[in-house]
Image 1 (tube, rainbow, N blue to C red):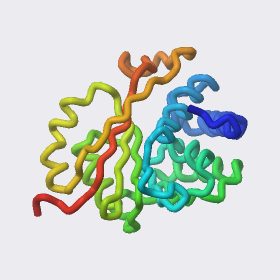
Image 2: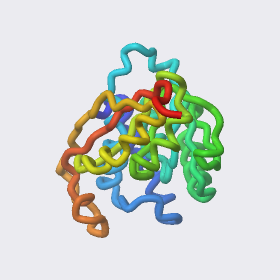
Image 3: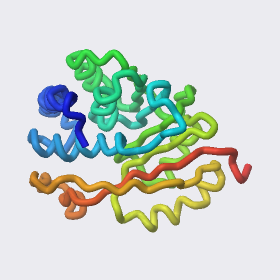
Image 4: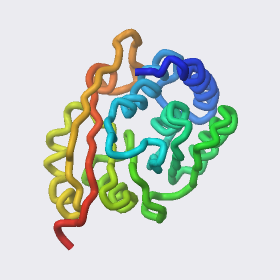
Amino acid sequence: MVPAEKEKTLRKLVEIFLEENKKLNLSAYRTEENCWIGNVLDSLAFLDMNFSHHDIRCLSILDIGIGGGFPLLPLAISLPNVQFTGIDSTRKKIDAVQRIVHAMNLNNVTLKWQRAEEHKTHYDIVLARAVAPLKKLLPLAAPLAKPDGHLVFWKSMHIDNELKESEPIQRKLGCVLIDKHVYELPEDGACPPELCEAERRWGKRQLLIFTVAAPAES
């Protein structure tokens, strides 16, 4: 899952992130191995996606609700020729991630202190990880995608009800679920005990991929 030539840089990211995490509590993953598995490897599941009809180097990618910088930062490191934008409504989080971006010398990342509803630029791909249930997330993300753009959401395996509840919103916004990419995180690290039982298991997770077309309803 990790490009061999990028692992050293990604490990450095973990080191710098954990120092910031001590100041601001950006993530429940407070040890190197937990952060590596739960944040970095989880973020890099995106690299398994096939956007064969696009040149990945030409894509514009937005991460909404960046939190501590995942999946934004691992993907920016792994795809240095892609331009990434990250937005978050919490200034302290933006400032913390900006310090990490500066320390890592990442020139392909732009950060904005902004709510998703206030952001006006459109992107080829809009990402969201641990932001909101689909019925709330889709109205935030879909307007920020270009026509025929993609939405990619990190989710657990237990979201049947969440998907069902979001169907009217999907139709209204012209969002079509085109793929579920299931992946599995390695079991060689112990999850943080303060997380709920479901979150403490690494195991299988999935990316939901939507396309955004013309709305079916006005």
